[in-house]
Length: 185
Image 1 (cartoon, one colour):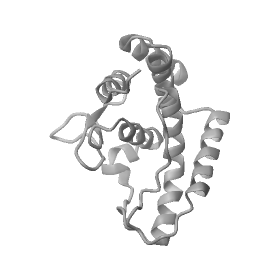
Image 2 (tube, helix red, strand yellow):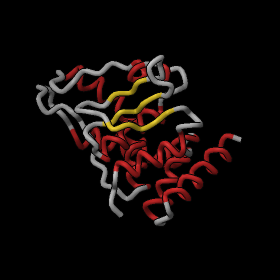
Image 3 (tube, rainbow, N blue to C red):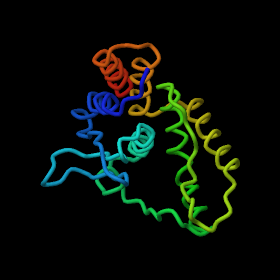
Image 4 (cartoon, rainbow, N blue to C red):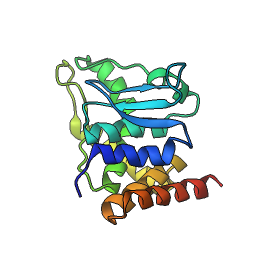
């Protein structure tokens, strides 16, 4: 099945627009999370350039962020762009293990390729991509062993229904919503 960002946006919005007042929105060059404000009544996960992978990555950050973090622009986290030194790259990798692990599970649910991102092509830091990949894989296994939180679990269920079982979009959304509400009960 083709991985259409528009379809992913509809699935995400169907699960979370009314339950968490959050929508997945096509963004420009850089991803950004914006909480609701006086100009917009809902929170927005903006993913870069219509890339399906970017959407899954940004969704994974949202799934991990707690309620207080979801009230802050970009969840209140720092971000130093490409060109980081060794210390900055180490800090980046530490905070990226969990979201990239969750992203790998979202990719698996919708049968989409996953690649870790060290996101530092212009930096002078020596990067051990394999060590970082091993940490991401270990965290993903931990998520599977311990169980996912309600939002990512519901999303994985809906993505699996849509992409692996070829369930129609509206039914995949209902499948995810049923999981979300049964988990929260």
